Length: 123
Image 1: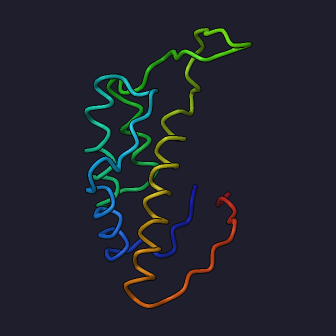
Image 2: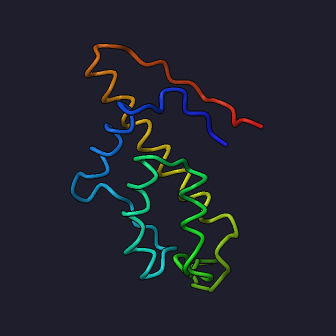
Image 3: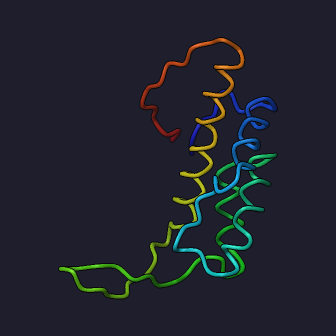
């Protein structure tokens, strides 16, 4: 679980502004057609009032993720199972990306500086 110390209304508004920019939302190739349609809505909902965990939970339902994907080995394509934690990885990665973008925008707007460091996940 990530710890988002500054995840308040101001930061969420900046996150949402970023998510509403044209072509700003990453569409994973692991998403099904339903997932590709639902993903932007789910992401914006999580930005407004959710967490990476709530986003992953919703993403993991309703056949939004493929069960198999094509990969490459020695230059040859082969089919493999999508990792069981694919929803968590996508949700955490994208929520975190918008969080950091929002913190940067907020720092600029508030004439503040940011100190970036590699944090630890909460146990």
